[in-house]
Image (cartoon, rainbow, N blue to C red; front, side):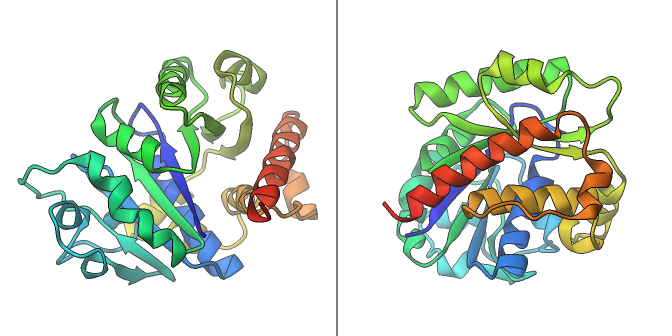
Length: 267
């Protein structure tokens, strides 16, 4: 039985969809996993732009309105994708999401949900439908406050956030990772440094991990994916060039997460 990974944030512009697409394509292409990637941002979907699916015939909106799931699946970059329709003008019920995708877990190793960046029913639907939740955040105080609120919502639904992925880290002016972890009560499981690769990849509509070769972003996504797979981290001279003083914190958290995922496979 596959696992559903939900990526959430309460603030736009943090790179949540970039990370969702990167994780899905990396699991599929580097680890040969069967992955379904779903745009669960129903009011402002844009996952298709990251995956070069610009004008889909069928979307998650159609699925929620009764069409078959298979009719909305598009194979792209080695991943099955159910995009959204940013021109949709029909009402949909986000709370149907869990029931619509529940049977798919037997056909996939992972179902990845890219949620709405707003505190609404769409985010709640992702929280309820996910087996494992991860928050994507930038290391600043406004986003940190939003992450704390998202954590509270997830706990109310008995779906606690299992890890925070820090994106667009710039170093000197970042909120300290220990402070983020202490304030939220959630372990930091990845820290991705700011670079132009994410923006360049989006302009070409290619997932960031496929757009360029070995980059700090790809390396960090790989570490996260290995933890999700219950695998130990690779050791390489390349990664050591970019590890900062907080590397030990993230590494320990990923090791704990990897152990829990490994046990989950053999329950």
